[in-house]
Image (cartoon, rainbow, N blue to C red; front, side, top):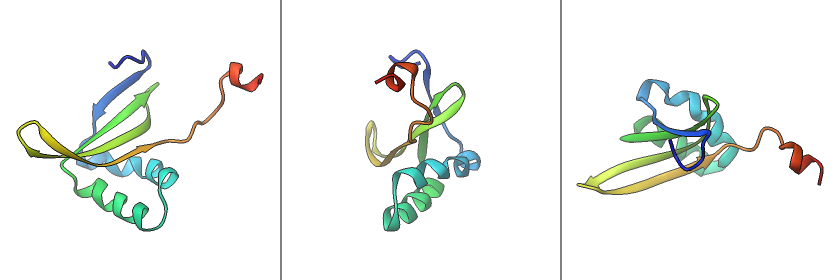
Length: 89
């Protein structure tokens, strides 16, 4: 678990990554959307941020050497609904 009580970070196996395409579609367009979808299939490591067992974001990572790596993309889903406190503003 992270500092957020309701967010869990999980590794996403290659066979389940296509389920995250919708987050990329909300985050990118044009060439970046095309490349992020290709990278999602081929990249070494994908981690998803899960809230209530639903993906809300992802990061695509590559290890270069030892503990040094590269971040290809970070994508975050659009909010689905406002909290009651925000709705009252």
